[in-house]
Amino acid sequence: MSKKSFSVIGKPLPKVDAMAKCTGETRYANDMEFPRMAYAKLLRSPHPHARIRSIRTDRAALLEGVYGVITGVDLPEKFGIMPSTQDEEALALEKVRYVGDPVAAVAASSERLQRRRFN
Image 1 (cartoon, rainbow, N blue to C red):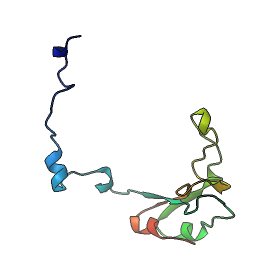
Image 2 (image 1 turned 90 degrees about the horizontal axis):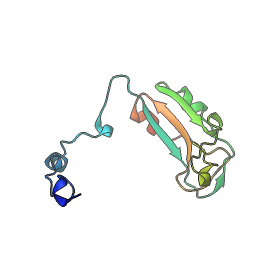
Image 3 (image 1 turned 60 degrees about the horizontal axis):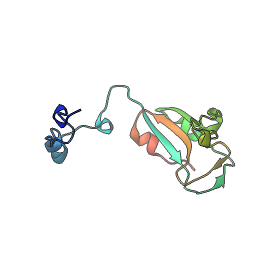
Image 4 (image 1 turned 60 degrees about the vertical axis):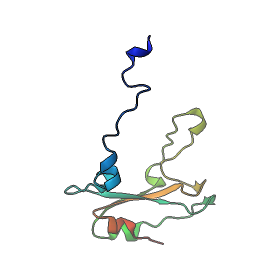
């Protein structure tokens, strides 16, 4: 293959979306709103290593506008796709292994509802 056969590789190309990004006009998925849209949020562990003794979801589930709250109990199947990750869980079930390990998820009708913290 000769170098002349490449029409894009190695060529400077104009960034057609650069001006819109610089001026804030670009709309990202996070900027979009649709009718009847649900907002989801993960509750993540603040601890690097800890046992999960209990997760109370009852107060959150009773709020008007909350569609559902799930924990690792609701998703017990392991799903690792590589041999080194065969013990992965969507939501921590018995223990968290790192800061940020997902513990629970909530779906609500507004961002304001799903941002509330329940202790």
